[in-house]
Image (tube, rainbow, N blue to C red; front, side, top):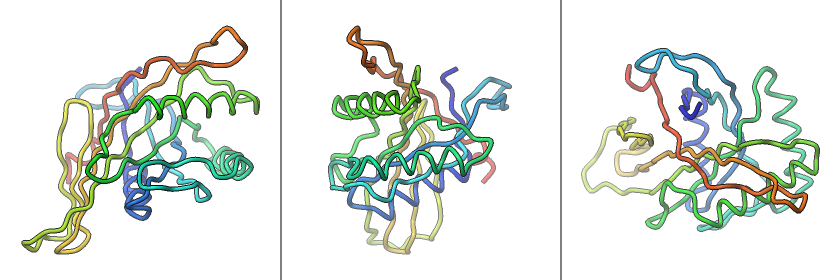
Length: 207
C-alpha cells in the first residue's frame, strides 16, 4: 500500500510549520493510520491526519537536525501518548529557497537511517518509514493577489500556492517517500532505496 491521503489538518500543519520557520528548514512527526478511502475508487491507503513539528531542533537554511536527543525522545513520547488512536507513521521536513527540491537527498536518507536506528535502540524497531518533503519558496507579487489557496495537480506530488498577503505568498510542493528498512548484518538497520508514493487530497477537489 503506497498511496497516501493527506487530510486537511495535516496539510495545514505541514504548511504552517514550514512557513513559520522560513527561511530555515523545519521537521517533525506524521500521525495517522491505514484505512479504505474512496480516491477515484475505494482503495487501501495510509491516511495522514496530523503533523507535529519538533520545537527544539537546530534549524538552518539548508538543514535541520536534532539539537537535543532527550527533547526528541520527549516529543516522540508526546505524540505517542497525546494522539490517541493515531499511529506514528513517519516524519516530515522542509526544503527552502530556490534550491529546495521535493525529493530526498542522500543526506536525507542517511539522517532517516540514523533516526531509525535510534528508535530501534529505544525499542521501536520499524520495517519502513514514511518521509514527507515540503519544498517551499517565498514569492513576492508585483500585482496584488487575492489572499487564498490555489492547488496544483501532479501525477504523484501535491502542490499549492498560498497567498498570505496581497503581495506575498509561498509556493509549496509535497512529495512522499516510503523508506524500507533492513538489517545491515552488523546488528544495525540500513535504510534501503526510497520509493515515491502517490499523494492525494480528495477534499481539495471540492474547494
